[in-house]
Length: 237
Ligand SMILES: CSCCC(=O)C(=O)COP(=O)(O)O
Ligand SMILES: [Mg+2]
Image (cartoon, rainbow, N blue to C red; front, side):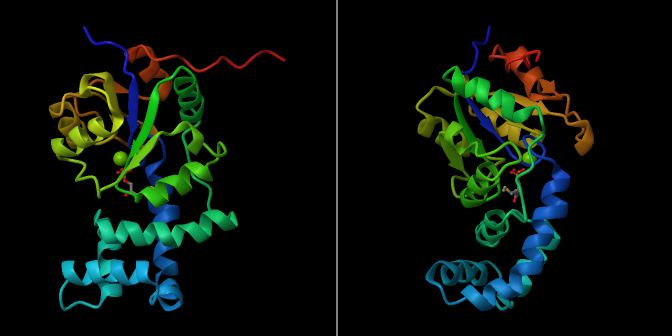
């Protein structure tokens, strides 16, 4: 018999947020702004360090071309993700982009955090980008609800060791942590580390249910299935 989780770790793309938002808004924004960003900021130490990482991973290639290739193939390469986060900052801070969240997400995050459940994010998007998405989300600034953020610098999302590291950071045994993702291989890895897992199968994203894990279509379904608090019902006027 499993106990209700004391912590919930959320993936972003396909779980809290639409795949179309990432692919049709965020990625094209970064691609359009890449050359201008490198011209304006290419000599800054943080950007120089990222470009050095790009050169190390794509020796002999022009770094901008390597970045474009990774973007085109949606490769979750750490220096690309770090640079995208820096580029998106301007879009979020200017109001050109707002972080998409499925409407069922924010009410549950509020209810869970309000009941003392620890909430964290684990995404291939950089920690900087995660904070922007939740800080400038369609549901307002949700960062005060979140206790921690992890990206591929913690480790690859399909390796159990990454989830073991996140459990250590959370200070809870893995069995008291629930990981939510749309990607079955990520859930396999979290399950191998001892976490409870649930696949988000969002119809609008076209996610295919793996059959290997419990599956839910929305966060309130997750709450009902795993014994987490349900969001407040809207009060009649
Ligand atoms: C603001 S997070 C941007 C999303 C992103 O870049 C990405 O690669 C999403 O991957 P996920 O691990 O959340 O599925
Ligand atoms: Mg995902």
